[in-house]
Amino acid sequence: MTKTKIDLGIPQSDLVSCVSCGLCLPHCPTYRVTQEESASPRGRIALMKAAADTGVVDEEFVGFMDACIQCRGCETACPAGVQFGSMMETTREALATQTAYQPWWRRLGYQALGWPRILTFGSKILAVLQRFKVVPKRLGLPKIPLTQKRLVASGNDVFLFTGCIMDAWMRETHQAVQRVIEATGNGVQFPDRGAACCGALHVHAGLAEDARRLAAKTMSAFPGKAPILVDSAGCGAQLKDYGHLLKTQEAKDFSARVLDVHEWLAEHLDELPPAPKGGVPVAVQDPCHLRHVQRSHKSVYEVLGRYTEAVTLDDEGLCCGAGGAYSAFHPDTAAEVRDRKVASIERSGAAIVASANPGCLLHLRSAGLDVRHPLEIIDSIMTKDV
Image 1 (cartoon, rainbow, N blue to C red):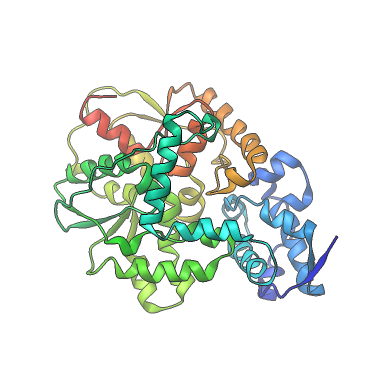
Image 2: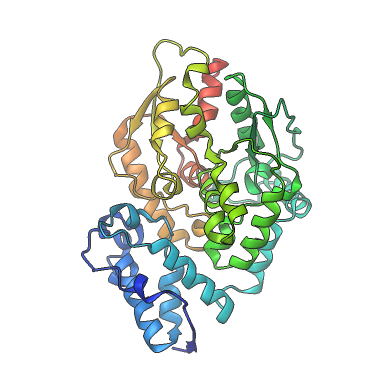
């Protein structure tokens, strides 16, 4: 195998923080599927240690780093508080800047996320291809609209972050979220086009410099001090991490304004309309970036539980396999990971699934499940459409 010189840039104190106890293994989706030590968190850290000592990496190293879903379930399970997510991000940034880890065509795709006009044009082409039935259904894409209804602000109490792919493909979700927020009596405003993309997928890919550029643009699109609500768990986790990404006080202050929309609604439950009697059971899938990164997944149960029977799955929050762009680049592994989640959902007995992250929602929907955003479910109940 070809070996490449590299400087991972991971502090030695982080590399030796893992004591290889193995408590993370049951919570690592790629280890559960492959049973390979190097596909586990402690195995990947061992590879990082070796690369830091030798200063070289090979194709096998790159393969195991790229095959990590970055769910960070290991961090929740780790009694030593090992910051595996940070080490993985640093490793991928080193690979992206010092090796051929990210080919030009991937970089081009990631760049397009930050340009709304290009993304809108590409989405329209994809929408046309869908109408001609040439887009495989196994991809689990929503029916992409040829035209979009404009989001209209109703006040300035809170901002609603709209993002890139979700705004281009799933704007109806934003509209449902807006209606639920407005049901509390608060007005919603939207950022300008500067907040085109949060940069989460770029960080996952090791393109940290691109992510920093997007972060700076995003921050400038939210003037004032109003709370910034996010209805995508992955985007919310990224926005809350701007302080770490940019390492400035301005970024830290910005991140302090960011809340997952369910976090905010949990503090305004009494302002929502009264709940109807009864309620259909809804299986709640915890997105990894809400459960393991933001650590705020319980707010979904609080809000959803006001209107439905929110059913907890029995898999301790195991990843569904979506992982941002992971399911596109590692479809076989992602499908095997998803199979475990589907089995847990089936055991719950619920016919409807709630997921607060668009990637998870689409990935699970492609398995034939009825998956909706939690606030779409609540919006439907309020309008008696569920």
